[in-house]
Image (tube, rainbow, N blue to C red; front, side):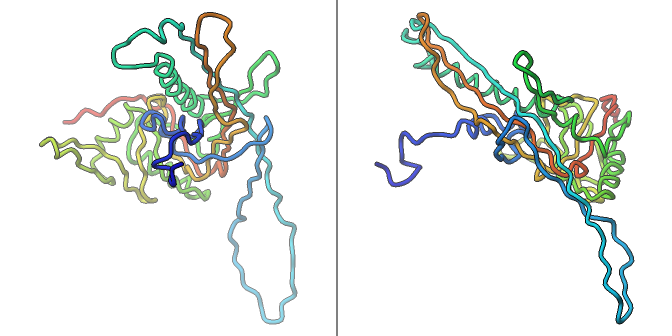
Length: 295
């Protein structure tokens, strides 16, 4: 028996963590937000907010006054069941193969990556939530469903448009730290010449590649995350600390009964998006995706 986890063999791995970390460059949002636990298919949480500031001065000998407190708001999202399965003939599993020993293990590794893609796409593209039924799958609401307060439109993606969205989000108490963009939007952001921080990388190969990984704005810095599932006409300013992936059933894999001359395996789980402090995020949509022409 090994005395530490680095030497131990056979420790049970959490499949949900494996899926979270299996391809973080391709699932930046799903991999970034923390996880929590759901206890029902309708996952609920409470949201509170601070009242507006007021002129607060009292004379000596003043009489105490009290007022009714503002009740917290109950929010909810539905858990969504996700599943993928593979089968490999038992002959294919045992024949000699180039580059791998087990076809089943190889295909399951691919399946876990594909399931991670499913999770990322759901977060970014699902604009409705549905309770469903025995005949219709439940669906949780993703970013398009939740980000409604700070919802702006613009035809051109510019530094000023981002700064304006940040200002209005700041005015209602938000302070986004992440800018979630498509590859095309990232190229547009890389043409900004003012109000940002550029980093040079890659001198190990005697080449310099220029990229903007952080935008320096009037309201703090924004880390730019490129997401292959983001549409070119939309960007999000997010505060990941107010987002969680809530698992009712963590992802796990298993074997299906042998009903034919095949190995059959599955991976499944059930989870939802817990979106707290919706006003802490913003969305800019309607962008034309055109890269500015450099004179």
